[in-house]
Image (cartoon, rainbow, N blue to C red; front, side):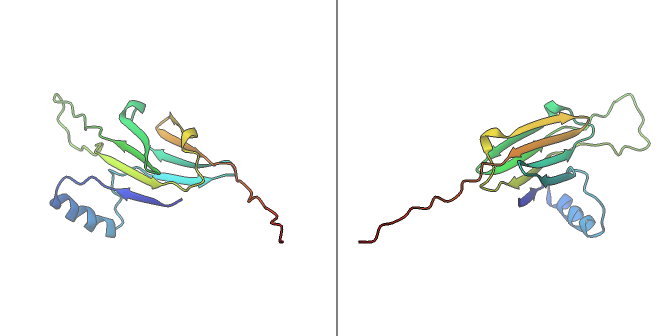
Length: 136
């Protein structure tokens, strides 16, 4: 399964620093980490979404592309004087091009303990039918 990643960058200044930090090995916090694997029956996408609720995340398929998105906002309490504030949330859109062998109508997702598990069942393999042609 191939995938493409879309980052929703707010302005050119942010884009400059995101590109710069990517080369230094600093992880971009707006994109959730994912594991993609397959077994005999399905492909699986597991996204790590600590701090998110099920209602914060949208999963949909459009034109054979699986999208996992969120627009959760940072919640800072006004009555606190923050010394360090690293916990933030931003827009993200992870996109995965689906192979033709995925049964899109059977896709299921489960959200549990901050992990989104999307199961993409495979269509049954149809063996080619051999047709004997009579030669006159």
